[in-house]
Image (tube, rainbow over all chains, first blue to last red; front, side):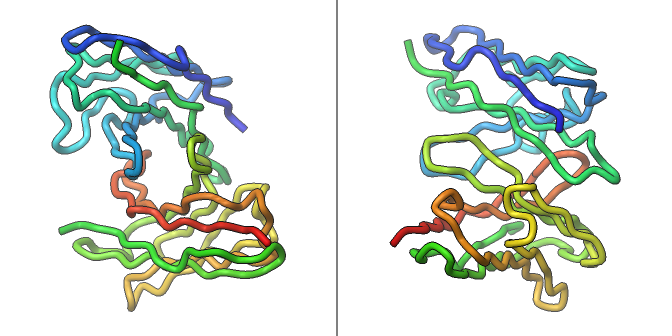
Length: 111
Length: 117
């Protein structure tokens, strides 16, 4: 099983600052890496798919990069609504893979 | 509007069973792989099971293999998760999700399953 390790666990920043979140895979996932945002009491929301493609309706301040085993999610200038937990997810075990995995999450909190 | 709506969660005793449903609307349900993902409150996301668009193939996480069964009724645009031999460790919010490209682009609101005596 491919393990995704996210860092840091918590990121304390102020509105307007730049946020850089990392996701490292235990083996190559090519570009099959997605990022999600989750707020308390809500389902996750897809932000980025295939490492660098923004999902429908996602603001341009969100960007993704990377390939192979190292990926980053950048929020260029934090808005108040961006403080949340962020997860990465891979699906390169496909087919005939039997699992997809998520990272442990990075909480972006207000400093 | 594209949406997924789960139902069927609740409180069940250890060893008991529960069936979750996920009603899809606003898209052509029979064109997509569908999945279940769970989340213990305050913890991370864990993939549970998947099913091919026509129901011909299924896969499960090791933690639920042999106890959970994923199925679908494309005529009713509904996804199911039959959960048997439930354990305390199965307590979580269960989400159904649509896989598009390599990511889950549509999620339901989640349904809470609590396994406790």
